[in-house]
Length: 580
Image 1 (tube, rainbow, N blue to C red):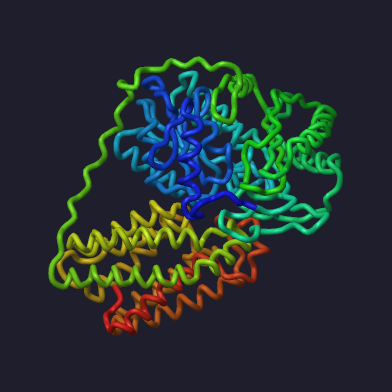
Image 2: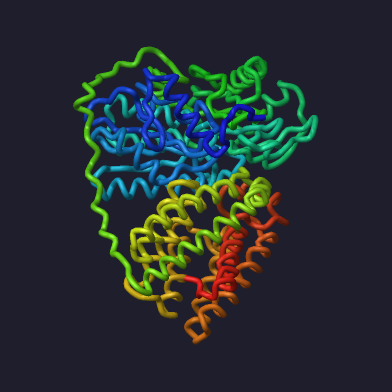
């Protein structure tokens, strides 16, 4: 149970404040996360770890000499937004470019990818790399679809050490790729974790059983097995990893090993388990090199553990053993070449924003309708937040309702300000989209952000939109979402509700139906499509490894989208105004 918090919605912000205050010699807080307390030498590649909070000491606990230059921190189990990632990168960048390192989750891939593109547009070389070490999440022939779990610690360490040695950006990326290709992890859960403010864990494991192949965001295992002795578990973990040994490591006998506790498994238990693991590795002809036994990548208070093997060559062994000095991990004495704070490299100039046109007349009314629509969305999302969280917890981390509330609240505030400033509908919706993405983070935050921006960009600046423009706006939202997320109809995502809505709305408008009738008809199709996702097996995102468990439950993203569309339709019935 997570017991110590103030406002659950501010849990991560409060954690960052306390973490930075406790480790002044290592880190300083910046918007979006933390960076090293002392600037690094000019020209060094800035390696940034990142992801949702709830995993300490990953990701912020490894910021310091010899390891990461900074950490981008999202809400609990939620990808940080692109705005957060860009903010931390600008604070940490020292002239050598930026490498974002994170686990292979849709929200992280989207948001860090967006941040990297924005940095590149600003003249800062930036790259991304997603770790894929979890052998339970996809078969050997589909390694690019695997999740990143505790093996990310090894990838982060070697890539950071290479950057500390002076390697350039391309070379640091190569080291990350090379380490990841040789790294495998398998984990088990004995019981689930509880989000701050929740009164029940995200999942439970029956007495005497264990969940095999857990995720680190509160996802249960992909299967269950009998909980036997420590010897039994050690054999299952080692056997599973050796069966997935990378093909090009036949001659390698040295391995980096991480036996990782997930938050509630005691160190004494881990050492009992390690004794059996070490013997089994020796019997397999493998030699552990500076093994790490302890909590390195946790999942709040989850009871469980994971075992990581990373097959080392001479280069990777040197980097794995290189010194580091961080709040949560120390090895040897790293040699720094600090520079005076006054010479900290300034962030590259940001691209100038296009001036937002002011609106008048009918365009002001359209912007006002957009604000009313967001108020309706806020009301329904807060009403349904708990139910959406329960849907998400079936095969995910249970945070969808909470994330949607944070996103819509921020979007409404931004839209109201933009409307007060008499900005055009495009600027109002762009401000709302950016605020939604920045505050909510995660996959849904990024998708809602680009969708709102796309709708606004399709609307005229100085007058009310016509039917053709409204049809184009619906199509533009669908294109923006599918382009960013890569989802298709049938993948069990919000696209399953958005695609039929956008298609029906645009089709009926182009055939001459009144806006209100076309919208109502399209909303009905979206609601039906959202309900029909219950029969689908997810093909993307965190729910994919737990596809069978998800069958019978509608997708939370499609469900929340349909609820918002319905609320806007009801708003029209109340006010008599056409929906925007």
